[in-house]
Each structure stands twice: as C-alpha cells, then as structure tokens.
Length: 339
Image (cartoon, rainbow, N blue to C red; front, top):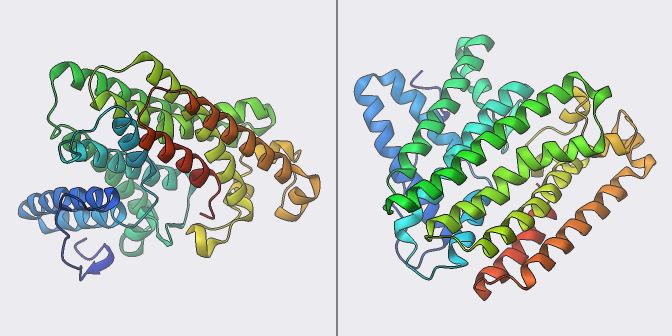
C-alpha cells in the first residue's frame, strides 16, 4: 500500500500555506497541503499502509482541477466582506476536499479510467491488489475526504450563529450532490423514461447546486448574517451558471479532446447516459450522428441564454463591484472552457 500513490513515494516538498498577498488559488493549495501533511503524519504513525492511503488521497486532492467551488465561495464571501481572507481559508479549502470525495465515488460508479489526466483512485489501487480491492479502497478514499472536509471546516473561527448558517449551506450542498448523483445513475438504467427537463433537474442538483449555488451561499454565510436579496441573487445566478456548466460538460463528454479534458471521450455515449445533449439528439449513438442532428448548436444556445440571464441577475445586486465583475467573468469562463 505504501507505494500505491499516483507518483510513488518520491514526492516534492509540501508547499506551505501561502502568505498574505498571494493569489487565492495559491492560498487554497497551501492550506490543503498543510492540512494533508498533518493527516498523513498521523496515519503514518499508526501504520505505514495507512500513510500510503493518505498519500494517495493527497495526490488526488492536489492533482489540479479548476478549484471552482472554493473560488465561487470566496466571491460569495467577498461580495459583502472586505475582511482579510486568511481566517476563512480552511472553510474555502474544505470544499475542495468535498469535491474530491464526489469525484472519487463518481469515478467508481462510472468505471472511469482517468481523471485530470491521471489514473482514477480505483485504478491506482487495482494495479497492485485487483479490481475489487481498487473499488473498495477508492470508496474509503472518498469517505476519508468527506471526513477531512468536515475537520478542515471546523478549523474556521466563526460565531455559533454563523457556524449554523454555514453548515446549513454545506449540508444542503452535500445532499443535493448525492440526490443528483442518484438520479444520474437511475437515468443510466432508465434512459427511455428521461426527458430534457429531467436531465436539467439532474444538472441543477448534481452540478448547479454543489458547484455554484451553495458555494456562493456558503461564502455569503461565512461573512455573517446574509442579506436576503444577495442570497436570492446567488440562488438564481447559481442555477443558471450551474446548468450552463453541466451543458458544457455534456458537450465535452462527447466532443472534448481527452488530452485537454483529462478524461476519455465518449464515456457518456458508452453508458447511454441520457444527457440533455443526447435527448435533444434523439438518442443518436455517436459523435458524428449527434452533430448531424443539430443538437450541439441547440445546447450552445442554451448555454448562451443561461449565461446572459445570469449576468443580468447580477446587474442590480447589492454586492461589491469587485465581486460582481469576478462573477461575470466566472460565468463566462466556467461555461466556455475546453476541459
């Protein structure tokens, strides 16, 4: 087990938490690296095999990614706060641990071979101990990430009332992600009973809620008592941008370049997943046939409509101009991406 890491045991030094003035992403990466180093040391002291499990988990967490959830949470917080960011970094970074939990479990369910251009967790463990062990160990990796997310969130200093508000958003985010994932699985088994509207419901639960809406509201809650107007703005903006994000993901799942996306192309086609794209294409079974139906253009139009509406929602919102500008830029960047 000790060698079952993504890059073996030869690891670069763990970066320290970023100093004041460093970029947000550097600060989040540093917070995660510091936290994970301590968790590895604790498990190593119990048994070297557990240290190997922890190192594999660290590798998955720090293997890149867009860090959208902590970024949206930051701008939700910054929308109403001009305080120093350092005290809330553990809460922001906790969302990335929660995201790794979801990715690892999703990869097991979808039998995916790669993620972010590297072998998925179950494939890493299967190389030495077989497929069944690999799946079981990956489930434990995901569980560990979810526990660690709770532990890191608990390191954020905040008044009791703020803690309850933050936890409410955090818990809603987790429940929505699981609900959306279940419907996603069900769609794979009952594609004939799916509709575009139901595919968009899955997108709202599995993607919009846990990628955009709840992180924004989570960040807003971190700043203290939330303005109902701002909370409603983030609810509407998050649903629109989150749906557009998933629609882009549907397109990339069929037409994306694996060298850029870090995932095999065609997984959704292989499993027959009833995405909005597939349903608009009336079940066409390959990329060429889907393109011939005109469905990709329809999905592109749906993305544009949602991004335009999301930007309009921000126009009159009582939030800091810096946050408004950042959220407009994020709406475009998150939905017009190559990976």
